[in-house]
Length: 184
Image 1 (cartoon, helix red, strand yellow):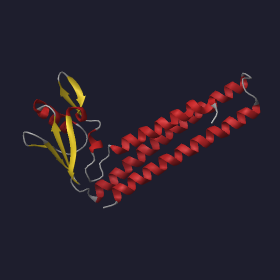
Image 2: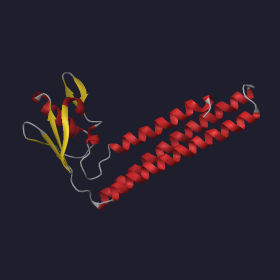
Image 3: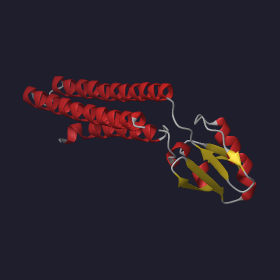
């Protein structure tokens, strides 16, 4: 890749990484500590991520156990989980919090696959917007005689190849996550 397209490749890569992290937070019927990545609790006068306040373990396939480092933060963590969008109500025994993941219904699975496809489409739009910006930039460079017409064609081809590569990567991620959710 040329230096002129490197910045656009990095932006496209960020879009894909963002999608990957969003897909990790979608629960697929079994325990996954990443569902807690975006959950915050009001502790010590500030909002803190739950994974910094407690040890998170998965003793069984559909159970997450959250053991706070400081027992006084238990209620705040529980409140943070209840206010989050993970859709699981925590059970608190005074020492630890348990999250039990119910089996996903067929209807819920289909709903999740729609959400995943939408997130994938949003990521593709972001990549295409980056392509458009890149194309505009190289056309301006050609107009101002910074590059030749041949270099313009080469750069446009390179930018399109990058776009195709990242779109294919997004499709693979979406397909893998949907397969994961639809498998029982």
